[in-house]
Image 1: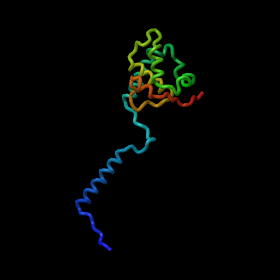
Image 2: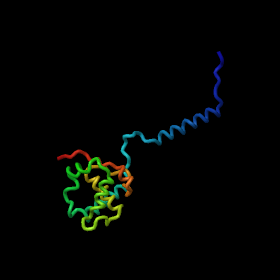
Image 3: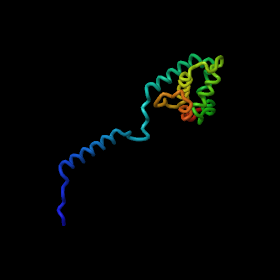
Image 4: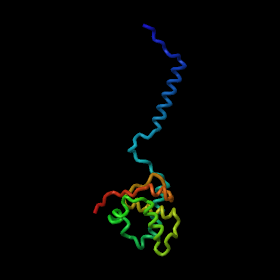
Length: 143
């Protein structure tokens, strides 16, 4: 039987350092894929801005019907871009398309929250591809 050889002390130090580095990397990873993402304060501000615009421009005509089961049934499963395009091309009724894309997107962020969706972890981009990737998934109606 051959005697066991021990690695040199320098090799042990390198191995120990590598292990510590790996532990540090693992500790930096998220604990779980199911952990909710933190909400960006800019996303919260976007919802607040959307609410302000909704109250000043939309509320006169849409006091009731944008957070009811009919709205969720019509828009549920569709993309945020579908809603963006509908609102941008038809609202406000007196001057469709007159708001900035960012304002329309803020109103959509507010409508999503108003209909039970959580605030997004980041600001909704006023970009057709980004909005098309966001699906409107509302919780079941309580009615």
